[in-house]
Length: 571
Image 1 (tube, rainbow, N blue to C red):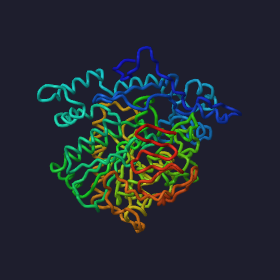
Image 2 (tube, rainbow, N blue to C red):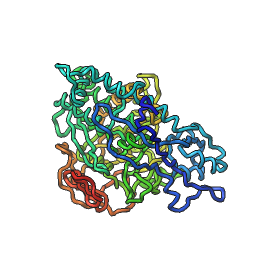
Image 3 (cartoon, helix red, strand yellow):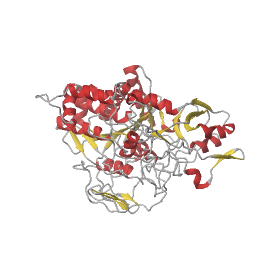
Image 4 (cartoon, rainbow, N blue to C red):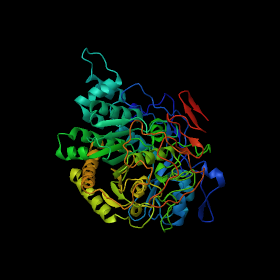
């Protein structure tokens, strides 16, 4: 496959086929059953390969090695059926539609062997590999990456005509043609570089925290603060993205919104008021390991890269099923909103808050209280989802959430006449342990304020949104976010609960975000929690964090059990 499709493989190389989730399922006595542990080996999207993206240029090099040859997309109209529920625990779910339908990826051969038990289901995409290849051609320019980069770099020569280094070229490009940035997707390192340059150009507004904590593989999870307020009491608004690795449009839309804030300060009355009275906290890459994996190995990877105790076959935890609120769900007629099975695409982890990525987000949230609003950027489907996801019980501020969601939908519609549906997450499908539910429910440690929290599912109809839709998606999201922020500015929701003694509810995060006062009291490995809407986590928001006996040191690299040092990894 040529560079036009951004598939940079060596001559004679072929993509390694990813075993489709569900390859080892079998049918017995008219129902889907599992074949002990050997079943699980076929359920993960696994590949060997380098985890470090190729660098050395201003354009991140995309080099997928996974193949989806033989995979199809199947739609079942009724997910509530027992057989479909069982199958859904093991397949790669792409979409859940109105009326309870579900779309999932599965190998053609497996589905053929079990199709008689799913007569109502139909194939809606007969060749996932061809679909991905076509989409890759639209994720990047139609010309080669090298030609596109050469064209950009030609615009940013030094005064003496000599070439500029990547970072210097990027800074100059931001000055002369900032919109070019949103014609392309960017890898982990480039996203961080962009925010660093934004801060360097706007030091009075933008501050970059290099790491709020390490990922499972030791990568930094950065945060970016944008505000014109100098007060430590300033209310915060969180904007997160890339909780799910394959949802590339999220960080692009986050950068689009961040740029609008910075450009609008002093020039736009509405934005100027926002920045004088609120502080925006962006966490652009919550799942850096998974995101790097989508650039270097498997474009459709969803979870983080936790080795799950060295199982050897099933990698990763779904970070958006790992947060404490509703972690184990509630009894209902709906399908399970997460899974305790390691190979599942919605595996929730060994216990609530087990993952370093979710711990970093929760800790940083607490350090930045009060947080009055939060939006978690995902894809796809054009949806504005409000709490709850884990239970059909109405949220305390349901009337506010519903009206606000509709107003955000209306604002987005005015941009391109594209309608975003507003509904509770549960009305779409049950989902346990999601970030937005935890943000909304975590009242006691938020300085007496409720965090109004939405999950914004961006356009369009797949995870592989063409790059020429980034600006449209960013414009729609920015319109919705402005409505959201204006409400928070005028009517933040206060609650009866006050921050507990010793919490950091009114302290503004400084430096890297860690204060070095952790107590090291962590839940035991494998502990199962059932949290209320206002969970109390058994660890502090300080530098000592970990899972069971795995503790992070203050430099964010060394862990007991898995030790990261400047010299590499020690098991």
